Image 1 (cartoon, rainbow, N blue to C red):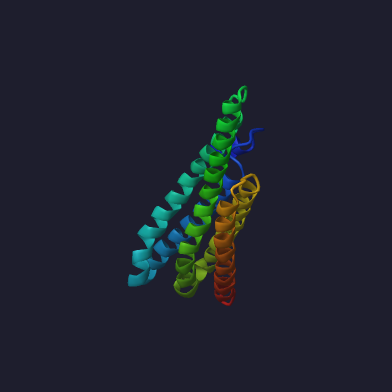
Image 2: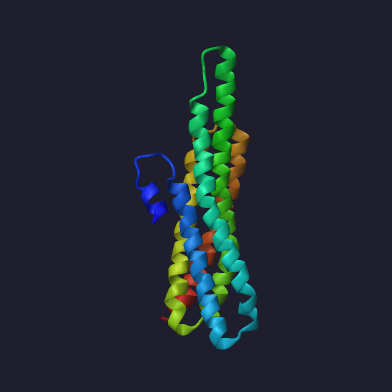
Length: 196
């Protein structure tokens, strides 16, 4: 409830990047829940190993809510630096650019991390309890939404960065991640939809 309250305030942070991390945390936590109830019923050895990883990863995503807020707060701080002298202007420009790079890298990490969770979602779509299959679907949609939301936050920050080499490197990898995500997402969705 505290996060929703702060999110709804008329302030620039937390914003969409934090929401992306929250969606990833929710999806991963839901997969952890499905793992737990399935293991309790089936004693599946493979799934037993999943539970701890998914729970830990959900908490890691949750930490990214504040990481994203802090990263963009650094951008706002950089813009408030003095620009009275030529040196001040140059220092401010460097600080703003470095802050934007960091602000782009945080949601970029969220995108990469979400892809690491997808194989677990696929196995749970195949082996999870039938009465929890809709929870696997909700988790998948949360992860997908988190990925797409994190991606647009990377792109909006890149649009303010003047380092062409940095931008090209991130965009190339982000495009590769998007293609991988699309394939994984559709594949898992097809599996769980056949079980409804």
